[in-house]
Length: 128
Ligand code: MN
Image (cartoon, rainbow, N blue to C red):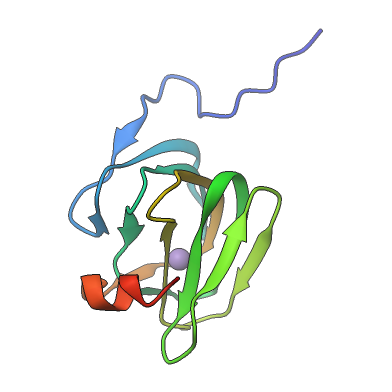
């Protein structure tokens, strides 16, 4: 038997702070390596990122619950367990949980993130 650990050894879960709205925890899976970082992120209902971009893009794999992905200027799209999302370089977006469900995803982030303004309640409410 072999256990493949889903969190980097010796690293505690981290509560995410000022670039998120609501309660968000993350397990560091792989510290930034060659410009690639991997985190398993857990959003409580209603929690979400701020608007942001990734210099080289980002891959999300939804591992539980349901939520939203929204690219600036477009309608938010629902995402749920098993879904994958590709976000292109410098695409302004946010991701997070539904108002009535937690959501967890693995985030494979390529290059530096540029964090922008909070997603307003009005913008979040339109994602329904
Ligand atoms: Mn992102």
